[in-house]
Image (cartoon, rainbow, N blue to C red; front, side, top):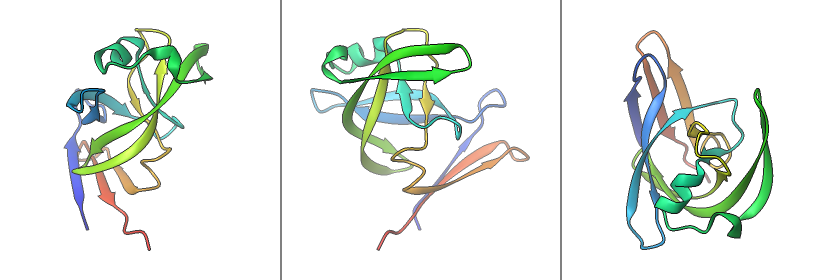
Length: 129
């Protein structure tokens, strides 16, 4: 099985992953792995960095502890744990939103293990029938 482990950064499950931009290049991001987040969320500035027109995506509202915020879903490719996947990413209408790796599209393709004792998070690819 394909597996990748990421050491925690500053005691947090912060991992490196890549998103394909409109010019077909991979762009590197750091994001918190958040099992409480339904979606992977990047910022308004990140959508520009990738060449996406923010408001061309499907408008949704993100709800969290600090309230509600508009975001736009864009389908693109991500590379995480040496695996490429098509994924809908929510780009927040704010530049201050923390980057999060959420469940939808990832947690159903990987077993994700948070090992706080060893300060690492591991993604193990699930073999689907």
